[in-house]
Image (tube, rainbow, N blue to C red; front, side, top):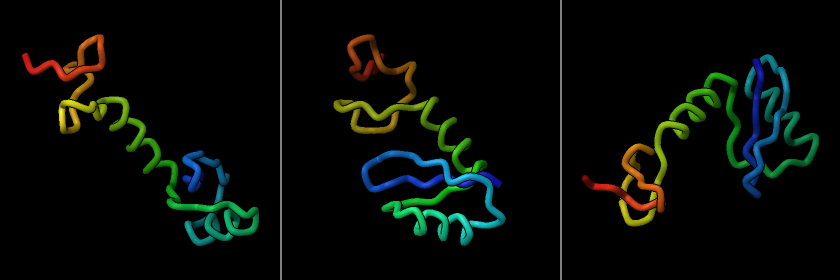
Length: 78
């Protein structure tokens, strides 16, 4: 399964195909990444889908559907 590492600087690094998360973590340590989160392919796809469907907009005060954000990036409560 493919594994990914979110680094402390915000970059998402592809660790590659590993048998389990422990092996992926060892690879990240071996190459010196400052990892804050490890995830497998399935988790990354779930997060990508969730982030595509919703955005946090200042002023809305909540996670809102992109459809509720107007062209100025403001929350549209109508």
